[in-house]
Amino acid sequence: MSSETLSFEKAAPLNTEEISNTQPEEITSEIDFSLGTPITTNKTSNIQSEEIIESPITEGIDFSQGEEIKVSNLEKLEYAFDKNTQILGNIYRIGKAKVQDIFDEDKSFKDYILENEALRQKDVEKEHWKFASGKYDDDGIVKAGEIATLILDPGYILAYATPWGRAAMKSYKMASLMGGLTIGASYADGGQAATENDDITTFGAKYAFTSGAVKGTIHYGQGTYDSASSGGVSRDSNTIGLDVSSGPFRAVIAKGEADTSTASITTEVTDYGVQYNLGNGLTLAAVGTQIEENTGGETSDITTVSAKYTIAAGLDAYFTYHDYDYAPGTSGGTADDGSKTYITIKASF
Image (cartoon, rainbow, N blue to C red; front, side, top):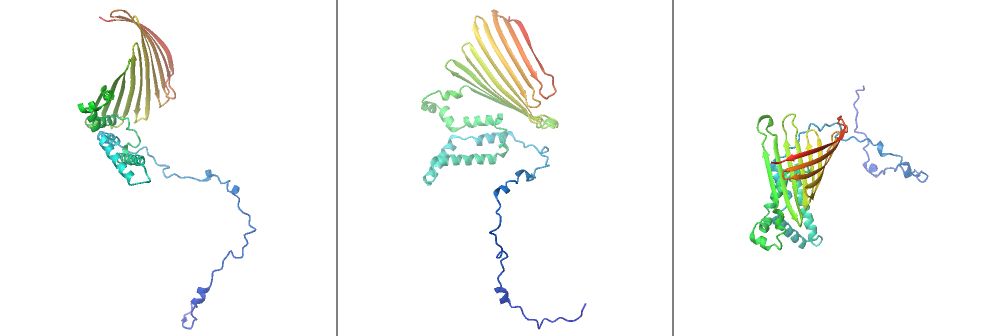
């Protein structure tokens, strides 16, 4: 390497003015695009969307070990109270919408009613996010809370629970609608140790009504068994039924469903029946039951036809015919079908 000393003292300085006046040369200034072949859209149509490889961010993630969201009975009651409205709140919302309508020419009173209600429901969904799936909408505690919200509504109390309120009603028919309602609920604590959280909650309601010659009752029941024990099974069940009669005729239909959440098994049961009293001690009846289970596709159909004849006071004769059909689906069971006939004499002393 040379050891000479470099000197820049005699070097000519750069002329920055010449550099600044230099214009960049356009690289396309001498290219003629007029003879180019345009790209047609049909050449791009061969690109298939299937060639796009998607890689979802959730691929490979196992959600089965996620912890189940627990909902307490108090939360169910709060949800039932918040999701329903009462007369005082409705009066406030109507007044608010009217004021908004007066000061806004672009929206009507109806627009603000719908908008405010949508915001109210959004707030309920935000506060009670655990109920967003709708899983608890038919829960017994939630239903009991909804009924309690109705009964404790000041408007309901004023209209139906006070003499002057009933006197102001044009008709007593609406007031009598709640007269045939019977409600019951129970709660059993699971105790301590292994069964500490194995709580049982049941709710039932019956409503009796009369319309001319027709009499009937509507039945509803709901039960929840929350098992927190290792290997335990949690169950939710609900039933609803209608029983009507008119003169010698009676008809019943009922629907029930049981969900075993731990094993993801749903069982549906449908019952129906009719009865007719021919007089002279003879009564005919027909009853059917259908059972379906989602796991394995098991089904069972049972049909029963019977006749009852009163021979004398305290002495009855019964003729009963059963027909059944069981299909195991993919559960591994054995298919079975057949029929049975019974003749019975019953004496009462």
